[in-house]
Length: 165
Image (cartoon, one colour):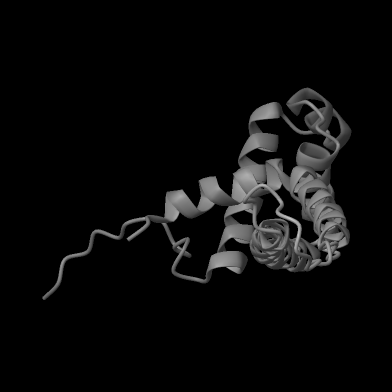
């Protein structure tokens, strides 16, 4: 079982790699199209004659072409699964970010999209760098809760020591 901190760390990594995920999807889609174009069958036509041909079967070229096409189609299926997985992840991340307040959304954009330093983030909001980090971590926890469910990050992380009866 994963602990809540694992979900927060995972969410932070997703945010850091957001642009790379989008680029990966675009590149995979291009590779899929290129691979589909390579799958055009170009098998030679078998010829039958009485002339000996040196013992090489003419179907070897056909068989190797079919085998290569099967491998290409398997690669296409694997790439399509990867694209689907990454797109679902990006959709969850986008929905989670879209549901944030405009201030929190801007904070995440400044830190993870625009890659601003903590100093720049804190100066633009007239807060300390420490508070900018803490606020960002709180927003990341909110995003993790939205992406992975309420059990991923406890709502209340404080302990209550009470005496009973």
